[in-house]
Amino acid sequence: MSFLACRVFQDVVQDKKQIHARVIEMNDSELSAGEVLVAVEYSGINYKDALAVTGRGKILRSYPLNAGIDLAGTVLESSSPAVAVGQRVLVNGCGLGEAQDGGLAQRARVPADWIIPLPAGLSAAQAMTLGTAGFTAALCLHRMLENHQSKDKGPIVVTGATGGVGSVAVALFASQGYEVIALSGRPEHHDYLRQLGASEVCTLADLKLGDRPLEAGRFGGIVDNVGGQQLAKLIAHVNLWGNVACVGLADSEQLPTTVFPLILRGVSLLGVSSANCPMPLRKQIWQKLGAEWRIPFERIFTETVALRHVIPACNDLLDRKRLGRTIVDCR
Image 1 (tube, one colour):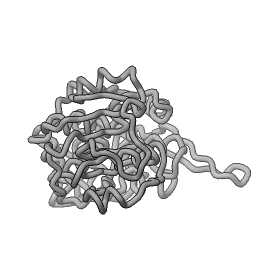
Image 2: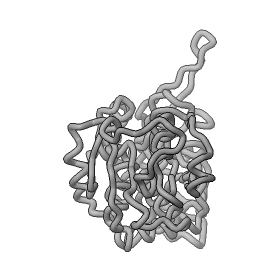
Image 3: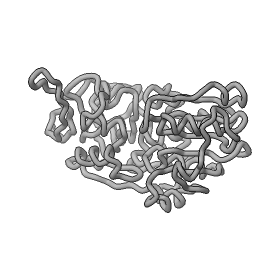
């Protein structure tokens, strides 16, 4: 049976590699190997997906390959006793849309041990409203709680707060009773961040951060999507035994800081890597996102695009023309 897929190709033109994506028709026989065939209902556009589809970043490990690191849908075929035909499932990370044909398609074949039962508290669309972005935000909360993050340490600063990870992080931490400072350079979206539960919304200039390696403690912790000099300045203001969850590099992969906050205040820098999160923990976090960590989905700005329109939407995301989460209807 034929189906639509956003497939990424690499061509060599005049000794130069050129990456381009097209929405094409494929057959099941062309998909990557795996025990489970899923009819994809919804996917989402993450930063990685946009980089892969536009060719602005090297995400895919082989070509051609269908993009999309997330999917939610129904099992069509399964040769694994652990996964039943008709089961409602999701997949995120694990190499999907990087080494394995991904979720920006109407069908995907995946290894059985990548399958996560769709939590009872989530629809397929809600699961993809979260997607890897929401899962990453929840992984930040998990890691910080493991390291004894508490509300009395002070407010949590969320950087890049209008993006996918940032939006869910603001809503998630606020729903768990934390005071949240949402940091965004887009003042036109500050009301949106307040609706998500942010106690304070500001630009970087508003915070008036210092330049010394160790500044007055003001924040209980940070969820950072940005990296670079901004993160270095924020770390210098984290209170005793606070935690910094490092997620992204929207500004820079560099971190020009010192060890002073770590050795004089006990501040912990926690790496958050969603793609290779161990499966038992992955399933545990998804179950929480459908239950005690369930966010008010109606507050997350989402735009749904058809699979045929996913390529321009990816360009818009990288050009900072999109807010919140972009969901892809693959049906």
